[in-house]
Length: 236
Image (cartoon, rainbow, N blue to C red; front, side, top):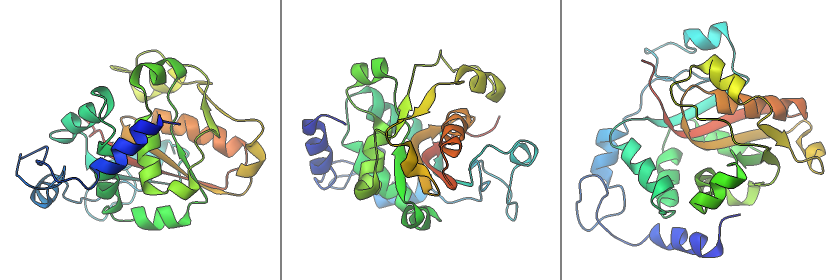
C-alpha cells in the first residue's frame, strides 16, 4: 500500500486548479481539455494488445500468430510526446498526484468503463520490493485505486523478484526475463477461481509483463483477464 500521505496528496491534487502540465494554460487542471483533445485522439487498436491498427482490423498480426493470454487490452494513448514526459514525472519525480488525472484520461477511452464494470477484481502490476522502496509508491496501484478503489486487491498478485533491465530486448527475450517473476498469494489463490480479473499498468511496451502476469492468474483459475494501460508503445 502507498504511504497515507501519498494517498492524501493524490486525492487533493485531483481537484486543485493549476497550470496544464502540457501547454501551461492557467487556471486549469493538470491536463486541460484542449491538450487531451489534441494529444489523446482515439484510434483503432488491437483488441488484445492495444497496438494501433488500421480501421476495421480487430487483431494485429502478432496476436493472431502468438496470443498473449489477455482476453482484451485497452490503452488511452500511444507512448510518446507528451505522455512519456507525463509518466516520467509521475513515476520518477515523486508526484503521485498524477494518478487522478491519468485515471480520468483512461476512463474516457472507449471500452474502459465496460471493462471496469465487468471486473470482479482489479489487480495492479506489482513492483519488486527494492524498486518500491526506491520510488516510495507503485504507480500502477495508484492508478488502480483511482479507477476502482472498492475492487482493488493489491496483495493478490506478487512480484517475486525484479527482472533484469528490459530495455533493448524483444518480446521473446522479455518473456524469458520475466519467467517466474510473478506469483499469486497462496492464501488468496482460491479467490481467483472463475473470476473476471482486470490488470492495471502504466505502460505496455511489448506486452511481456502483462502476459507473464496473466499466465499465473489463469493457472490459479481466473476465467477472464483484461488489461488497462495508460500508454502503449508503438511498433517500430
